[in-house]
Every structure is written in C-alpha cells, then in structure tokens.
Amino acid sequence: MAAEARPRLTVLSGPSGVGKSTVVAHMRKVHPEVWLSVSATTRKPRPGERHGVQYFFVTDEEFDKLIANGELLEWAEFAGNRYGTPRRAVLDRLEAGEPVLLEIDLQGARQVKESMPDSRLVFLAPPSWEELVRRLTGRGTESPEVIERRLAVARTELAAESEFDTTLVNTSVEDVARELLALMAVV
Ligand SMILES: Nc1nc2c(ncn2[C@@H]2O[C@H](COP(=O)(O)OP(=O)(O)O)[C@@H](O)[C@H]2O)c(=O)[nH]1
Ligand SMILES: Nc1ncnc2c1ncn2[C@@H]1O[C@H](COP(=O)(O)OP(=O)(O)O)[C@@H](O)[C@H]1O
Image (cartoon, rainbow, N blue to C red; front, side):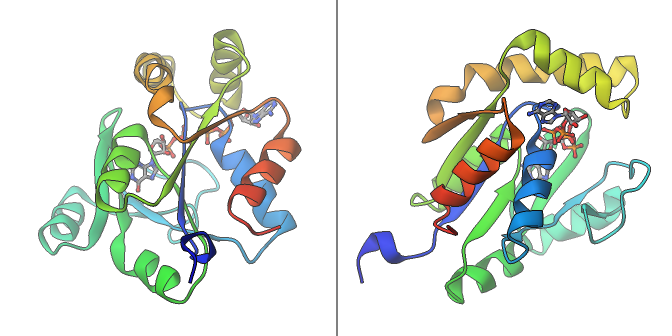
C-alpha cells in the first residue's frame, strides 16, 4: 500500500485563543465522523465544559498514575496545568484505519513528531498579534493573570511555527476547517 493511503495522525497546535477549539467544533459540525482525541488535564473545567467531552478532568494524583502506567502518548505542562493524550484510543483508531486529530500544545506536538514521524503537524496562526490578544481577552474565560501567562507562552509558540509541516491562518473559521479536512483527507 502506498504510504499516502495510510491514515495519518494530524496534530493541530497554536497559541491559546487563536481559535483551535472553534475550528475543531466547526469541523465536527460539518463532519461528525471526524474523531478528535479527548485529553486528560489537571485544569479545572470552564463553565459549560463536561468531563469526557472537552477533557477528562483529573486530579494531580490521577495524572501521575496515567504517566506511571504509560497510558499517555505524550503530555506537557502548559501555563500551570498538565495535559496529556490517552494512548490507547489513538492507536485503536489508527489501527482501524481512521484519521485521528489531536489538538495539543507545542511541546506535545514535538513529542508526537518524535515518536510518530509520519504524523502531520499543523500550526494555526492568528491574523496578527493584536487579533490574538483580542480573541483571548474577548473569550472572557480567563483572569488577566492567566491571560498574561498564556500570551507569554504564545510568543514562544509563534516562534516555533517553522517546525510545523503546514501553517493555516485563522481568518475564517469555515476556510480553516475546510483546509484541515482536506489535509486529513476527509473530503
Ligand atoms: N501536550 C498537550 N497539550 C494539550 C493537550 N490537550 C490540550 N492541550 C493544549 O493545552 C493548551 C491549553 O488548553 P486549554 O486550557 O484548553 O486552553 P485553550 O487552548 O486556550 O482553550 C492548548 O495549547 C491545548 O492545545 C494534550 O493532551 N497534550
Ligand atoms: N476566525 C475567527 N474570527 C474571529 N474570532 C474567532 C475566530 N476563531 C475563533 N474566534 C474566537 O476567538 C476566541 C478563542 O477561540 P478558541 O477556539 O477558544 O481558541 P483556542 O481553542 O485556540 O484557545 C473565541 O471567543 C472564538 O469565538
């Protein structure tokens, strides 16, 4: 079988507030069959977030156990909380021949590229720095301190864009979702 015919792992990364969740939500509205890995995190749920939907919300002790038992494909600390991708579900989907999407941070993207070199890393970039600040602030889910911390991380993330296979600029949610689906060979 040609390498191109094999389903690949697609990783979507980009700074906090750039619109990753919005793009993924739109993609799944149009193509509900697209499977997105649900990560484990020690972060507290935002209003409206549910266990097992946006994340598996776990304690620090539970997260330690996931690491110790080798249950995470990758994990990272981001702005004071830990996040990780449950390994089994991802491997099951890939073995079944289904495309897989991970929405994870830069450190996680690097780990995935290392352990699964044929994965495709997609960087979601903001149209401008000012627009990123506007979106992160406008979302209204984080305190000014947390926003500052995330913007500091964002500078590092924006500087790493060249490590990615593809960059998509999030000007239009619909356009980016379409481009991502095409990259994943869903359409
Ligand atoms: N390495 C890694 N990063 C993750 C994982 N899940 C989420 N993230 C990233 O953690 C960062 C913070 O996520 P979150 O607290 O939901 O904030 P948001 O991206 O601003 O909505 C984002 O960059 C996510 O992509 C994961 O399983 N592993
Ligand atoms: N293309 C876009 N144009 C304008 N606003 C957007 C766009 N994409 C996302 N947003 C808004 O930006 C904010 C952050 O988006 P979100 O999906 O939560 O980002 P992330 O998951 O990357 O942290 C949200 O309020 C969202 O509605």
